[in-house]
Image (cartoon, rainbow, N blue to C red; front, side):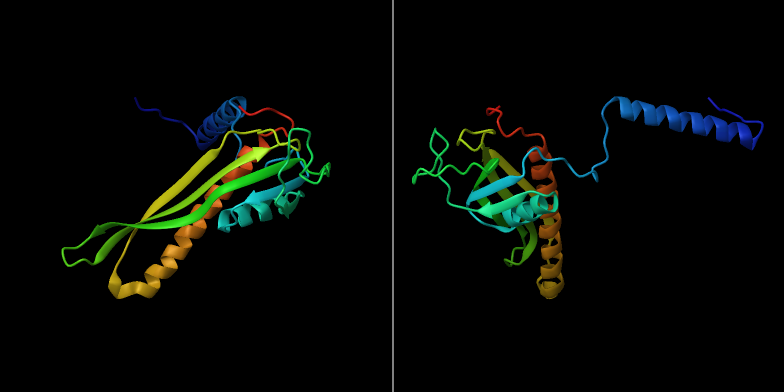
Length: 191
């Protein structure tokens, strides 16, 4: 099927109409651009557990959204107090990190034992709790990976490429964690 337009004006009008229909369709299904910063329902966040590059980056992203973050060894009981009986009333959310690490695994090598391909991974396991110590989320295990071709003759450039891949994976991981945190309500029970 072939369409022919008699003038440029008709072609532009059809194109404009198609773009409007596309925009309305995307808006109607709840489409949002990823660049929009998620709104957070909490202002005070305490961290406990393992410290690593992803948790530091998430903490920085939370601070940029206006949330105060603290690294703490808070252990809350059912009444919402810690072992000393203090109630951390200003804490809206406690994030417990069990795994925050970068991994590197050889995927392929030559007969001579030279590495040809690596699998780079960023692993981040966490769980969110409300101020009374009740879990808001189940333990969330997140893993992102990407392959890297490797040449032993170009160790320096491959090292720089590896760092860039880790930074990219970490940025994607932080964006996913922030989207999950933006969907949380601090008082809600675990799903």
